[in-house]
Length: 498
View 1 (spheres, rainbow, N blue to C red):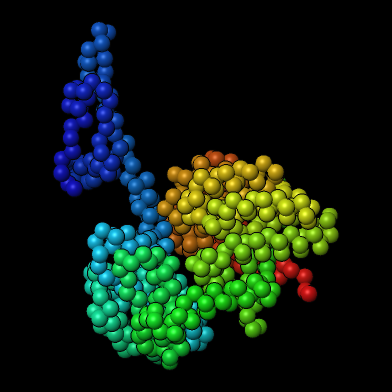
View 2: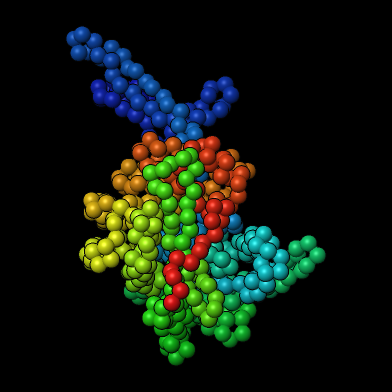
């Protein structure tokens, strides 16, 4: 605030007990005006008779620590490509709006944006061009919205806009401004020029008992209908309309995922990790990655897992993965399989499923799988959101010999503060730091910091998203234990052909 802080010395002299300054206090150098972020402590000095004869005041410079904390907070809430807030933070803000609506009834509106013809840019000019288009368009859209509006990148070419205290009528005008902005935008890459459009789903909500899932489903359904009606248009959600009633919760991803579970359209790929510094404790460590086969196309997990989480299907998917992985393990030659450790990803939903532990014990027994050859991976965000259940879950499975990895570490706000409470065996450094660490000093510093704290706690580290030899060499120099990514091995089918 730039206001003078209370004098800790006077506080100690008056109270006769130790004291300290408030958090986020800065120390200003008198002559230069240079500022240092500090933590301090002031303690009384007592004489032989017990009287206070002085005070000792200690300042500790925490500038780097606070800068790092601010950077991690930003990374956790923002999209690294566009600088917009990410899906997790966007959903949190919607939930805050829903909570406020309980005491302050008012209309709010969500816009769900899906770019049209974006794939053409990617296919024609590559992902670098597509990324640049998203950056330019994000900056342009931000300037067209009100200061109170929240623009977020939800993933891929999808965006969301939260319009607080905004009726459907006003939201339609804002949505039209957005649509025209995108339609009038011409993206130029080298000698090529592209025009893109946007399909916009609009859902107005207030204090009527709706949940975050309801709001997202309504806007998602409206966007889907806008695309079906010809794209580059706006569609408001209409619950009484048969078209929306059919779409809402019955078709789209929920239908495709259920169909994939029923019709055996889900498959597992395997990707091997590389031991960087001669670690022989685990000879062959592989992560199992889920995919969906849809009319000959191999759909990656990020295309359907968010929808599965949104529609409550992750528990079914996790059970399918475990059963399929164990069945395939049982088909392998035992001597060969015994030399390998397989990592299986579990969702946050599963961590809170009391029946899942019993299911796992039954699967281990049925297929005679050594628990020490299975490593379960849970994301940092899921672990912290279900901390008590996560710790209990990990401890019970570690008791029979299973290993655990904390995935995407550094992408959430929790990080170091919660790590000491999670008894994991591996720490997977998020790919957002690894990918550019050879050119970005901050990313390199983050990788070094995470690796050091992991080793201090006796946890082996794994770098995700390793795409070239230079990154491998740098990780080896830093002392990271394992590397994973396309530079090590492209994912390969895990299941044997039917």
